[in-house]
Image (cartoon, rainbow, N blue to C red; front, side):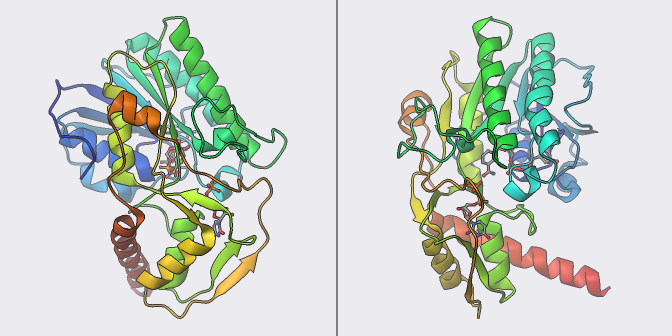
Length: 331
Ligand code: NAD
Ligand code: UDP
């Protein structure tokens, strides 16, 4: 269930780059449910076939396995392109930093070029990481950020900043109807157990009775958005007419320390897990919380799933996922 009234709009042909990933696969589900044709383009760098397996027999769904940094030709007319292709978890995007940067720069350039050729509306999945370790709290879209351009997060943060710059250049010059959403930490079913981000780590560790790994003091904060809320926000931004011509934060303003999240997870999972402290990674943002006034005003969007409601289905999903892995290992 997604936070948009499910109004069936005229059928559109929509390319979802990164459609086999965590967020992208939920977006593909929802766009098909709205009656659209969906083409998923993915290199399976971090995405999984099982995320989209149920869609493979859908008559309006097709899959292209390709890297967005390579030439992409689509031989049917496209109405919309969502560009979600990019690893999002720090361990994954830092594994091959050059490729992460190229995915945001060269990949986004190619996706924008495809949008120009097809006269398709374009949405770029940007990130709260463009604010870096923010000196303004909560983060409003007019805050210009505090990013270390030489640190290990730069391949992601600076790549996404460059992608935003290209989107706005294409928009200003009238070549592409481009839109930019800045996504804050999002969670839900279909995150990979080895994703490495906090929600998946803590849930998997609690389910396996392993220590929950808190990096640094655990006093740093994040704000967690349930995936169905995010998908509603992406579709609202893509559907908005006229183009707002402004980047929009999409996230849930509920703010929690890492320590609070650890306690919350342990209160929901019967576990004997303890806490293990690990060093804080370099440039780890200390506080993060979206100001969503713009999303409320322009899109009429706000999240409806608090962490207390989003964690239980996420925990159930990871439980089943881990059980499946154990079953298949013992077969
Ligand atoms: P994910 O890693 O699950 O999904 C990314 C998808 O893109 C994967 O299917 C991957 O295989 C694909 N991909 C990566 N590089 C590619 C390339 N060069 N060519 C083709 N496909 C490629 O991550 P996610 O959490 O679903 O994030 C989706 C998007 O949202 C990303 O662009 C990310 O930066 C953005 N975002 C997500 C969050 C979050 O909390 N989930 C927060 C901020 C921004
Ligand atoms: N974090 C943690 N333990 C983990 C994973 C992450 O304490 O096992 C911390 C991390 O240092 C950061 C916060 O949780 O302060 C969110 O990290 P995540 O990787 O989920 O997202 P991001 O830092 O990109 O917002």
